[in-house]
Image (cartoon, rainbow, N blue to C red; front, side, top):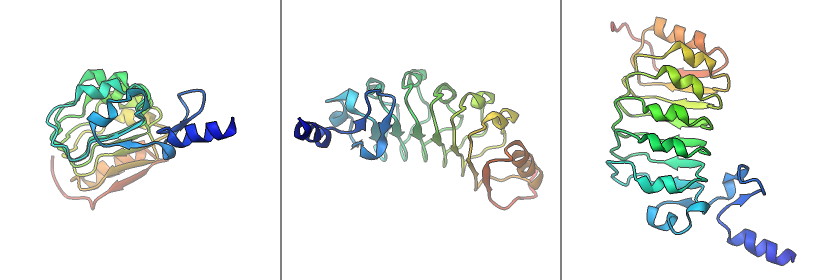
Length: 196
């Protein structure tokens, strides 16, 4: 009986407890193609589609109901569908180095997100509803065109890291953000004497 368990454990893609909500991501297989992942959609916990030249969000991703980590970095995406909110277990999302000009509002519906990477886009504002992401620990916005950070960001009590490097900000703007997040490590580039 014990041997059978270990064979099952070694052949499975990921270790999880009886409660599917508890998953050890260190033991999960990372899927790098939709075709392979679609063979067993319930076994997909980590999906990395970096550098796939995606111009539109692949709707097939919505079949992965147990998805915890989604990496769509270095593509050509400029929007995310509202259906993404169906992926209620999502903990980490990277849409770094894409073509976003606005913060995808659907992200504020992903209330289990802990790490959100939006760096190297052209996003100008963070929405007021960012305060819905109560579990968020990392928000990476470096190298965007950001000039609006809402006061509601102060409600993110679990936020440990907020990266705002390579964004032109005055010292006064930097000081205001630091005051909103006194318990977070906020990274800035050198302040500028820029007028907005």
